[in-house]
Image (cartoon, rainbow, N blue to C red; front, top):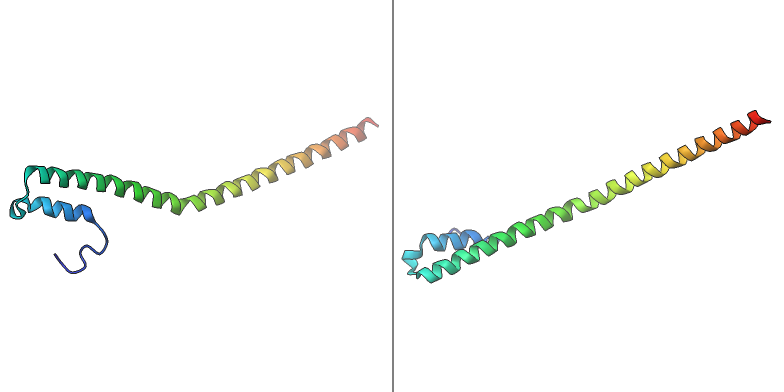
Length: 96
């Protein structure tokens, strides 16, 4: 194994290498099944953690966008209310 190869914590590839060299390592079929099961579990966990990281990265942006959209909607409602009040005042003046 090259120096630093496992530094990134990629047990999946390590398990794959062990399975690839199972005969040289003298692994029984039960050991191979255990390693395959471990590799599968590692892959599932890796996908889950990667997704959690991505969500954590975009969540602040999503919240910021939601806040900006809320501000825009509030401004729109304020403008609509102001326009409606102006029309009501104008209608009252016309009735006088």
